[in-house]
Amino acid sequence: MQITLENPDHEFVLRGADGVAARVNDSMLGRSFVIAPDRLIEDWAVREACSMQASDLEPLLALQPEVLLLGSGGGQAFPPAVVMAECLRRGIGIEVMGNDAAARTFNVLASEGRKVVAGFILPG
Image 1 (cartoon, rainbow, N blue to C red):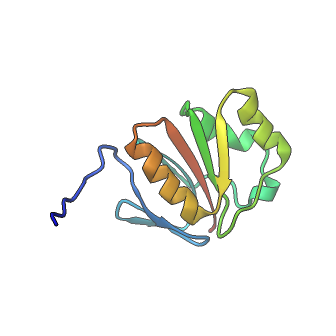
Image 2: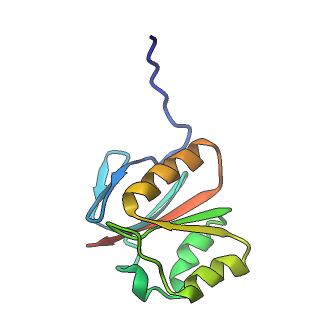
């Protein structure tokens, strides 16, 4: 069996995430952040999904995704319906999941060349 190292062709890769921290490339992040394959926005103001407002999506939507992922922390927690409706109103798919699953999904979609943007909620 031959093993080949595949290097991603995008700038930012999520190496892992949980409810407390995330590793992007070689950096540990302890505060909520927004990531796209070619962009990292550290210190996103959101600290919990249940208190989100539609305006909290603006940094993500400004990156013009076709798919938006919301890593809601250590487990799956949905934001208010108005937040979900804002994505639907703009014709953008949104998926909500725990940070670990959102990290894996982000990497798969980014490696497929999809226009994916993810917001990860961390308590820091």
